[in-house]
Length: 113
Length: 114
Image 1 (cartoon, rainbow over the protein chains, first blue to last red):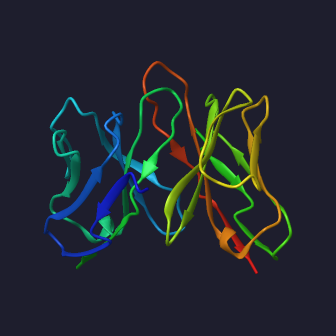
Image 2 (spheres, rainbow over the protein chains, first blue to last red):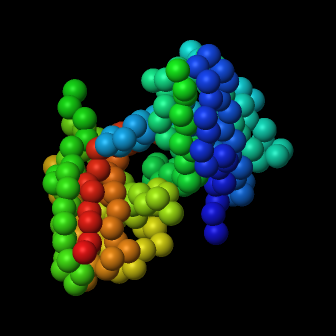
């Protein structure tokens, strides 16, 4: 059972455009939702994270929107740059100290120059 | 501050063999988690260790095992390798605290089973 569903699988955006990646979760016990960015040959790196008591969080060009009632959250990358080309993973976890992440299957983003 | 290191970076094994992967967490981090990454299944949680104790385990067969040493370094072992075990194995470390702590991932070990 896939607990976190991510879409689209791949995305091509022109430089300067907005990239949008969506995720939906099933387990209502999840209470922390991070997004990770992964470049080829590297491990995932935390990009931005949100808790369900907040509907939106912005850090630079990256914004997470969170809809608790719909059990959905999304990543928006404003003014997308070629350097943003990477695979993005949404994840969810329960804050219990056990640090177990449930990941979406990833979105491969290509920002064309 | 040095990041999470994993050794070796690449491994080629044949079916039926066993393999041991190593992970050194960031200094001061006592929690180490292991994940398997494949194109088809994405990132899947294997197990998590804290203070040499396995606290959580994912849905993987018993061929997958791990341990953690007193210096927080961790190893995972896969016995009787199968073709489907070919994957990128990622280790992540985090501090222990009252709140969720960011997991820092290593670069991974790319395992190829022939």
